[in-house]
Length: 346
Figure (tube, one colour):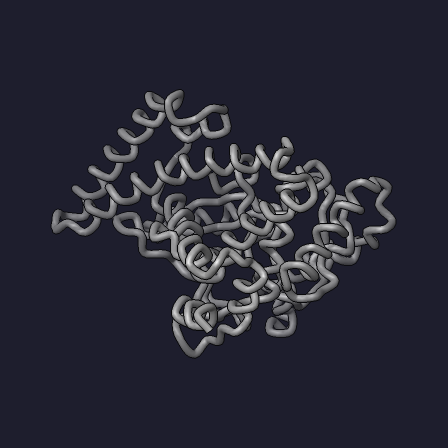
């Protein structure tokens, strides 16, 4: 699920690049977040100074693979390291209407409209949640372990990442380097789905090339991915059921009442079918979560039900460097999906 405990959800967040836009307004959101980011970056040390040599060598190898073998943008990202006393980087707020999956957007300079807002101080995120709830919105706050500044700064590594497996590190780094390589303003869903797909497939190729297809590391990727896809499929079933309700003509109050009934029934079904669906305990907490539209909307944002990217990848020959090269040609003039299909067909 999209949080730091079960599945990391990298997020684009360029507050640090927006300091100039805030002037000297002490209450400015971007100034406060940018100052926090600058604080982290000022404590970053070169990766070579980290004593954990295995971690350093792995990061350098993943970076080389991502940039030299896959063709992602050459950068100094992930060449510096920050020690933190927590297991996540920022708290991110998302919101949605209560009676539909209509997202609440925030508007920022440079990046435009975004369906989330990040805070380095979790108390600030909670205050934002309270404001949005007063507007009668569903709200979700989650922790994220990485974000991209879209090339404005050298994105660092953080100390909690030393506990990650090689596959998770590869997925995280490749995902974020995609954001630094391809960013189509105004097409957030495309950007996130593209990074999600390339991060996952790039991680698989990295583990295959370094460990081999008969390795435990490679087998673990498929086990983890299969479990997560089952979980996402369950969430998408719930979303589809709620979409039918939201498109109906019944009164809003009745919709909200039926919404609660549908979600509660889904939780009961999830628990009852858990053993037949999953082989580990990673997702057992779902039935205890305060599931709402903002939570479910995250899956609509990161996981399209039409499997566009996976299908296009198969049709175009399963060549990830070529897929990335085609994505680099996208401009904001046309629909990004259409442009990617055209670039791959050429």
